[in-house]
Image (cartoon, rainbow, N blue to C red; front, side, top):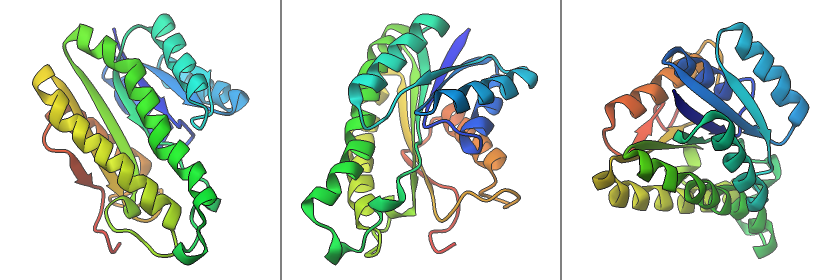
Amino acid sequence: MSTMAIVGAGPGLGAAVARRFGREGYDVALVARDRERLQVLVGELADDGVAARGFAADVRRPEQLVAALKDAAGVLGTIEVLQYSPVPHRDFMRPVLETRHRDLLGPIEFSVYGPVAAVQQVLPGMRALGRGTILFVNGGTAAVPHPERAGTSIAFAAESAYGHLLHDRLAPEGIHVAQLVIPGAITPGHVRKDPAVLADTLWGMHRDRHGFRHYADNLDA
């Protein structure tokens, strides 16, 4: 049985991705801060026939994230697919001229320290399997910085650079690293940004293993 871990799992995109990969036979580890909400989501997924377990961790505390992913692998098996897709805090999105150095600590913890800690935890298992996929999900400021959203613009750029470096270095080992940029909001019913549609896109990125950066929609959408 294969295992996927979704960091930042919630009732929207996270649940849709869990259902999509669950249909393909994956067990799913759901990682998020709120333990009670995780258990509700686990129950809803079980009703849909998806084998999922919840593991509580704050992505801004790398030691918690590492422990959660370690526990997930112990319970469900080696993590073959990692998705890093927590939703940034609203207070990360300050205008650039009002952003002080202290204001960047949260975004950097969220979008750099968290991904690095997660990847370093799951990478040995992927290498042992001889295969794996790492999926980064970011908003549009990962591709085009926005002067009113300085925190995510700066931190997503760093996360993107890290992911691209991993893509180039890990491809020869059978480990595919890719990024999905979602401009604007995830929107139920949208032809390209509905959670189920995005989940299909992420499944295709894992299956097809082509290129690093992919776009869910036009950047001006």
